Length: 232
Image (cartoon, rainbow, N blue to C red):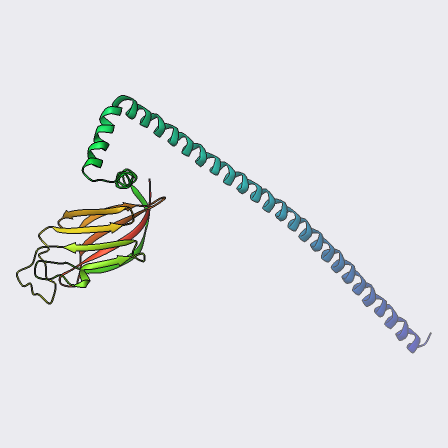
């Protein structure tokens, strides 16, 4: 065997060694890749099952929450009916006399219902409007003393006592004296009086308007803050 044949043999052995190495690398890589695919598929399946369980549990929780709220509402209505029955049953004549007297004084049934609806405590309030309203005095009664809200559904008129520097052309009232605020709305009107700040509510069907009156930064004006609330 000469030198060239020996060299060729070693070269073939070396090539076989590299081929075997590459084959092993490909086999190991393929096994790892297949294992990764299998593990990823298993993880995806487990995640999907977990998400499904969480979704079903959330659905059950929502259903139970709704049922609990319905039961609480039914219990509250039953308690209210019992208290109303006890009230009317024990003091029916007195209650009728009070209502009859109020109607005789000119109070409409709508106003009585409105007052009953306003007995709850306003919660979840959200400010819907904020306006500065001029205070009308014996010396000043301009158009700025009236405020129209909700396309005429609610109208406000503010009156007060004139301040020391009052003029006929500009508003200037005494903020330490009581003011009188008249609210005209669909079911009638409501008047409040007192020293600022003042607060009142006007009930609607399923919600109420909460009105806060405070001193405005602008001279001769009060700030009316209107919030939409629900009753507790």
